[in-house]
Length: 324
Image (cartoon, rainbow, N blue to C red):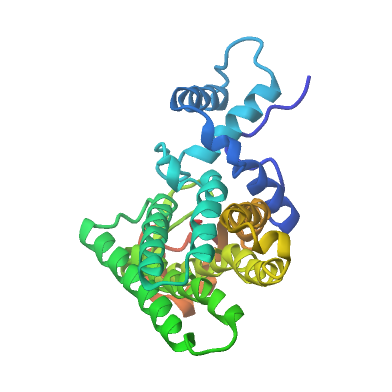
């Protein structure tokens, strides 16, 4: 008889990069975003039943693993709520390839830059909100500030660089403007979208999953890791495709068929994102462990919360979900 699967743990070792990559490639499979809601709810029910040993007779391990895949790809790890399909990591490939391809293709006029940067930041805001740490609620006002700040940051960077490079003889440099705008906006959007955690601290749990304290130091560390991952996710496609397009446009057969340019860039971005979404998510573990002793010096307020709750029996190791 085969051992039962622990549905609350990943199938691969999350302490290694390879294990995390396998996990996120499995979880962020773009095909998962096409699964209808009723099947997702059925998957959630199967996971819940299997967790307590009440699954239907004859349930196979492959069925449980498939249910886990759908559950992890569509439901928030903190709240257990069904996520908006457009904010899920499984939609990062299809959504990102269309938007990024459009930004790389339509960069020559200010109206084009404004529209696609606004559209991209609207998409990013939804993704950031969907993949936040749900144990730290954010108010509508904070969401609005984050959204408009990131949008204006992206527009300011894009339009400013576009104007600065208009007289440049290098068209290749102008093609890098969308990436600079996206990167700068990520440094604004994600911290502002999760400002509640920066102000009050990210929730830390003990070995049993019980809330132990709130740490602002860990919030800064976790959110910084998310920003790095998001920039890394976009960088290869937005760096390499301008170079590829610059060379392709020198080929007579490609230059004479401008109708192919946008689809080529969209498909190119899609190929990069198919690898980069799981790879970027794998750079750092999603659940990060810290020793309580480290909080004594780095976050005395959080350590005091631990002393107030546990007295002399403070847990040695604490955990937090950095988000995606």
